[in-house]
Image (cartoon, rainbow, N blue to C red; front, side):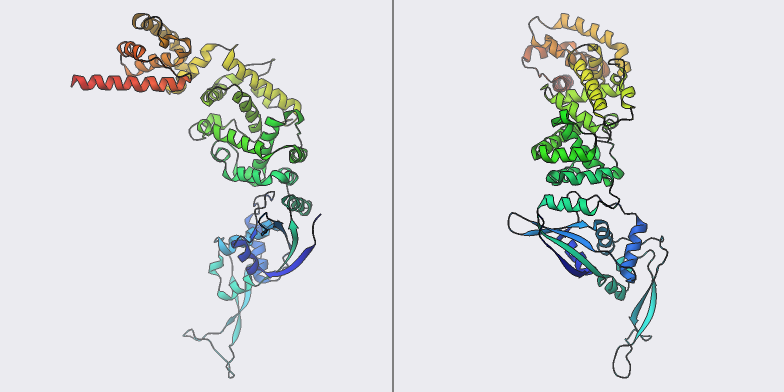
Length: 476
């Protein structure tokens, strides 16, 4: 149960000082991001400067902390608070988009030398003036208008001794009649984990730099939604809910902070492979529509206990050709174009399709050649079609070289080293350097090889380059 509320009259200046000092915070976990446009901000600032239009009450909640202190949050009025705060503290410049822009104010009379004029009794003389607020910041205002803005009366209603969940409930109640969209409103139903969701949204480099989620989607609460969808898909798939409010309510009862942290760890593991500047095609897979699907697939991949580099190979192969392969008569585009994007039947179909592709990629039915070509093209920065066209030549060259240089029983001949060894053959042709003498020595001196073929190749390549560097030095 909520305790009683109290009503506190404040001025705009006093209220914003509390915001600036973080005595009162705007960013309560389920609050929607700032989304007012400049016309709305201008109108509110005009109201505070002119004092002709009443600014509605602001609703606050005081939360109890474990150490006995309190933290106040804005429940209703976050957009108004942010607009006024940006004007006073962040240099917001009022635009020209105002119906009324001249603000009358009383100022002290001055003589031609800038001295204050007084009447015969020594009282300061005043006069009325007007100020055009278009293209002006708070710092541009005359002192009299700064005082008028700071002194504009506000009324706050403060709910006392709230828990985090009670504050979230208040946000939902007070925003039930205003323009919260579905995603923003659904967050109010998962108040128990709202702080965790907000932290991930605000700090995740993966969401910012490795997906195609937009800033507009961020303002609309979509980022928070995809975080919860990922948790739901990975840990509660059997109970999938397509309606955001229903999903949030379910997670509020059945999820845990650990599940959200685990999803964050999945995000972090994918960063090296999906930076949208270096790996644009991969990043384009992670949309607000399908990101949670890929998190479900990555969770299944994680249970294979193979290096994450392999998942990157799968993602790249998917963008190049695998998405055109048909499973049960359908390819990815035919499934993904279904307009019922969050129906459980479609979500299950997408997961099953991608899981089938992934299992076949790593374990079976698709040609081994697809994976081999993808590995060489990625690690040698080559076009996959060029590799494909010459792959038989590279294979024949390698087989002949192995017969001529490597003794039977060498671990270098083990099948699990084939990817890295064939990549070395291609690399030797790229560099126009003979592989034979190096390979003979390498097979003799090395008994340990990495199971991760990318790591194995890079180690071989480094040793190969050192070998030729030493050869060049001895010739000098």
